[in-house]
Amino acid sequence: MPNGRDIVDVVAGEPGPKSDITLFREERSQFDPQQRFKGDKAYVGEALITTPIKKLRNQELTTEEKEQNKAFSAKRIFVEHRIRSLKIFRLVQERFRLNPQKYEQVVLTICGIVRWRIRALILP
Image 1 (cartoon, rainbow, N blue to C red):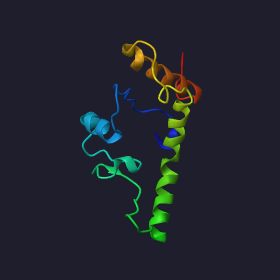
Image 2: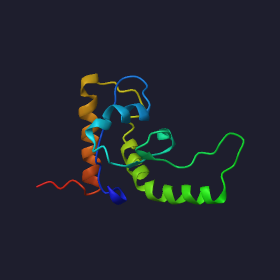
Image 3: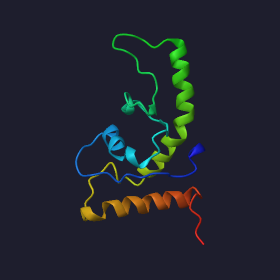
Image 4: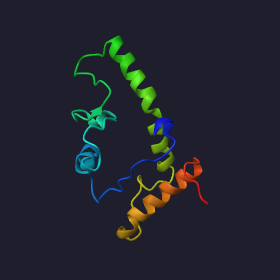
């Protein structure tokens, strides 16, 4: 959401390593085909996702390209802050030692706690 005021979509993940772009391609059918996204450099090459300009090997970015990346980052910083607020719970960094079938439930519970903390979740 604009200004990172809510968590819109959560993919709890699967066991083992899997890249962000692969997860996006698997879940893409859930979104409108005309929907555009902003992503980091992990999503370079995906047509629906706008990404920062990546420097070529042995070359530097021009001043204009650096300014474009800076403007792009200013719009995405809210998303990065929301990701950080989820990582505080250290669920992603460390091995999950509970029942693997409970992983998604734990992730969604943490997202609910974060939404409550940022006042995006209104409880009756």
